[in-house]
Length: 62
Image (cartoon, rainbow, N blue to C red; front, side, top):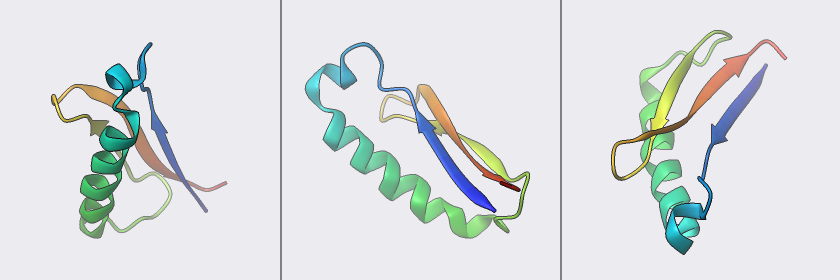
């Protein structure tokens, strides 16, 4: 299995705050994973601090 996280940082990486925003995304969505079985086919949209959809995570067979 493979865990895939894809985040679109936009044209300017959140106005130079990419590390802060990515850190927040990883903390929030990492903590949220306990609500999933984490089997192939599980996935969810990922949102930034402005609640804009900026990507997704997924568990794939490979």
